[in-house]
Image (cartoon, rainbow over all chains, first blue to last red; front, side):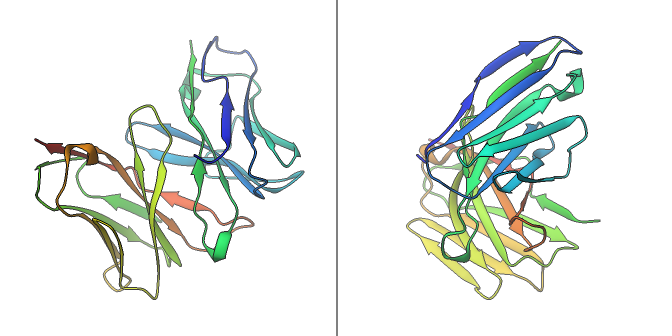
Length: 114
Length: 114
């Protein structure tokens, strides 16, 4: 498995509280991504990073922010969690090996917002 | 609007038969199409990548075709086994954005019956 870890793996929180999810890689890959996965919607891109301090929005970025201060860490923050943000969150990395964009995924974080 | 559709949410087949999964897309011009496997409670795992100028790609019991005229990819698993039971996701890369972003279909859950 690619060296990607996510923490926490499970979290239950209350509406209105801030939440930060962490993705850590040991592969030194340039690109990192945050997705959410919901039944019927598949994987949807929240934010991505193409380098340290370089980030951009994905398809469903509202209510989320990210930061990348080091190559190995990509943080996803929910400033004020809402029940609609209950989901499974996956981090992925990509190194553009040979021109392709194979993504390697972390194990996921199951977030429940009550 | 852009859309990716994978045939039926669930597909059941008998062990030993060939499973065929379909990925259709509209309003994309993908440079690459990828297939991933996802087991319950885990992140997706890359299986195969096919480029727009390739018609077919094989890997062991897996075969992927890519028809840019029909805007369709077919994913075949020959001599299927119960261990092949999983959700299979297709993903498109149209080379847009600062990072090479993938857009995922919602997946087809395959069950291989013994």
